[in-house]
Image (cartoon, rainbow, N blue to C red; front, side, top):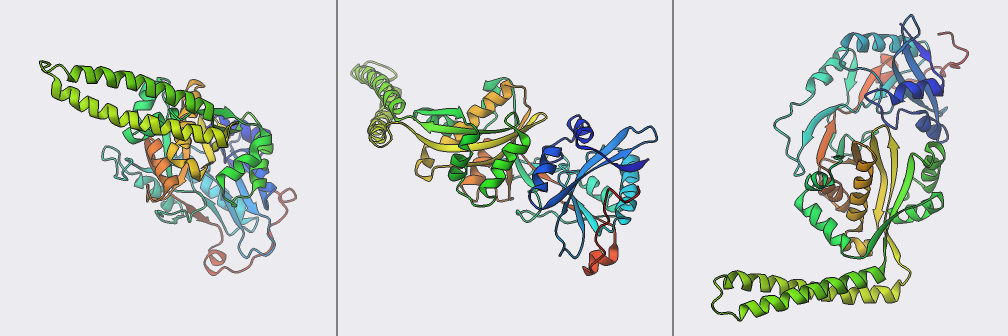
Length: 415
């Protein structure tokens, strides 16, 4: 068996059918990173018949001043990690292959789950940790970079996932009670979800309100992944709908409140205490709906045509939808538009047959701010992956940082 260079089409055909497929291990991502200071190489591990048994997109910084040449396989390799013989053979062949090309090391961060957690951060006791995977790679010469709990690694080790279910009621109930309440609250505020186009990427960037990555990255994601994989969605507050809905809910509750008041007048009613409690709750709801009507009327005067209050960019690949970035208008955060937006998208993605929504990376502090709280609350599965590994090719250069000769030209180097 040997390491060979693959063209984009052959690599993608292998990648999409692999159990560990992910949107980083694609030619789309390779072309994206090639535009942003990297060279992309597609490696295959072929048997004597030419059949590909494993593959990896490897990125190399296109930087002449780099002292140590590093390859990085984001969320790679695409290999059967349970096949110990295959993993061992691939590792040895890869080391030999990269050694001839003056590499110092290659970094990987496979999406292998180390532990699963509940939304409060506690470890799920019915699932064993995958420490054996780490030990297996260490025996093959990989250096484990540790179980970091922040965002200092190339890719976040902690991720919030929502496992989808075609039964929408079951899916809704898999979310926390506080999340369901926020979604229900957002649905009462005249919000409408719609799909944007490439012309709306600038709008999304302004809602995200973060300068890193820059706008060009989102435009490039659209260019290289295309409209069928890279999509943007928005939540739009429609004040006139908010006004009408608030009025409808107020009138309905007012009628119920009057009926409860009539029942309270019946001194022979054996359920009088319960009715009094219901009347008090109804009074509170009436006050809330009245407040909503006043707020909706004010918003209608300010934004009669509506206002976008939340946005999200997603990448669809395989059976997973990845939340690339999202944001919310700070002035409307209490109306929970981002919760409603993502919930409605989850329903739609479940109907389309997708199995998982990756809400994105986070730290081990699951509720330290609004963004991490939202990811935690909207997930039904929090995982921490095994982390990063370095496979050392040249020990002297790796440990001393000494400068090596430039990497040889790939196409002119005999395999």
